[in-house]
Image (spheres, one colour):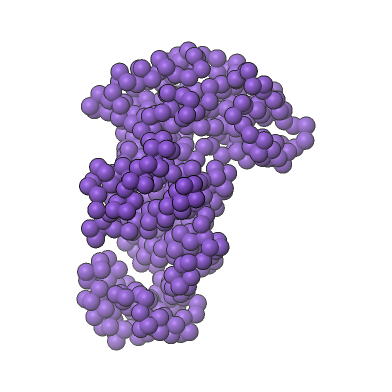
Length: 461
């Protein structure tokens, strides 16, 4: 999806937080006075911008069992508004000022304890609000924070926990802690252990992350969906915010976490930007007349943009005459084709698959082509793991990773699995990939999110 022929680029508070929040000075940190007694800490960390405004993260921390159960943020808000929000904080708790080290240790101690029993922090923490905290390294003084009750995980059912949530948590504890090694307490409707973050009932949360409500988002989407690509910047960004709000409602948190972890595990490999590894050539070094000379001559070709495809094809032709038929040269020549839906492209690809059946880049090209041809399928397709396509490799060149991720994007945008799509999108963001790739990835994924939201709205009309 493009706007006026260019990839979509949205400057957002989220991107600022991920990339720059840690450079802001700590303004203040707070926690509810009774956090040690109740095992629930509402930790607030605020950082100050040079303009005097603050960016704030709030972490609902369950020290007894679940870790970071919820989190939210306020971006670049006036200090007076921040003070007003503190005054109206839900639950009537006294929020005392603490130093950053204690705030940091409360959050990460709970995460570590919960992780021992298979519970991951809230997805918004993983994708966003963790960046308002410092990295959890040895540079942060360690403070012993007691977690659990008598050393055991203790789950307190809250008023907003439904039976499915309770059942899932108890099964997890049964599996990870073992029978008799955890406690479970049911809480009556007239008692609340800690304030819940409820967007419908709690004024503090209504605009804490600057987002519109579900109903507002639905109206915004319906009003602008037919001409969103021609909207002015402000209206366009408002439309895209509505898409994100509606799309988030279709995500299952537990499946999101599972997909995210799987993606990050699969993509954990070193990436080379400048050095060209021998393996990318596709042939043993002994079969290439002068591999180092070939690598040197390949460097400018690998950096070509689409505008220079014709020049790239010409240079590849010269290299093929000098070095022979090498899989990487054949792949690059194919990749420089303008129309990847043409019969000519399909024919060349099939020939290369037959000629170089073991070459990873050519295999991936074939997988991409197959996914494009089956883009209307409604069932979920598994992604071939990266280490299966690049066996025995401890590092890849950036072009190899780009091509693999492009294939993965094509797979996740089909099959109607919103949790998998959202998890993959966040994984790409957290990998800190080059801008040129993220622009392409973001435009493809946002197009699919818009389609999914359109389907949701149609079902609920």
